[in-house]
Amino acid sequence: MRLSEHLARIMVVGLLAILLPMITFHSMWDANSDTIGLNTYEFARAMLTDWAIPVIFLGILLSMAMIGASYLVRDERIENLLWEQEEGEQ
Image (cartoon, rainbow, N blue to C red; front, side, top):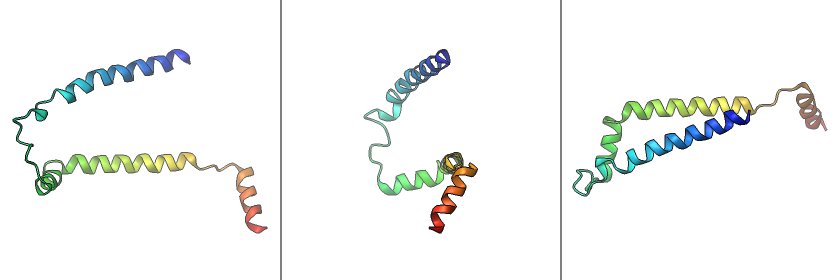
């Protein structure tokens, strides 16, 4: 069990070591980039046209995660259900 935990931690650190330099050294952060003068209208237009499908997909994915988490948190053991019903009657 310990080996799998350490392996998972090493994989997460490795993924971060790959992704962080890719993000920080991307060309969109250059001073002569065309996104320097981006205002609210242009940002909204870009989000609703260029990034519409990824935003919808991300929303669906996060909704599924929240529904799954709420289902996993529920406690349906008979003892707890009976205890909750007895507390409501008193």
